[in-house]
Length: 187
Image (tube, rainbow, N blue to C red):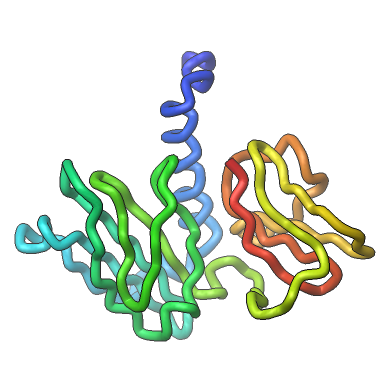
């Protein structure tokens, strides 16, 4: 491996995308075994309208959405079984911020996004409707917490506890500050 390749942001982003996808795969073996329900919309007729893959096992659901077109953003209809608010972004193409609206995900050309239910993160509940007493957000290689707090827990998307808020690899983290959960993207 030529390690200085990671100095190129695009190559580092590609590595990060693979790392996120591998973490989803390794952290959720129940979704990748015999007997899991798989629904795919990946044939030629789905080229212009986007492609989707759905895996479901009990209450756990995982969706991969892809815009295979070479130009233009596309709003792709996703067959979410539940209300879209029940799904959390687990991974997306480097530099892409997918837009979820109703049962549609908008992606630029050549991009993917992976959404899953709360069970995919090994975190039982993510609270989004609480007025925060602190401001929690991701930066480049760090999680930033502004304001006073007593307790802090950080987990990666596999549910493993993380120590410290800096020097972090780019991925999605669940940050729990004084009992309130936040989904944070670190670049």
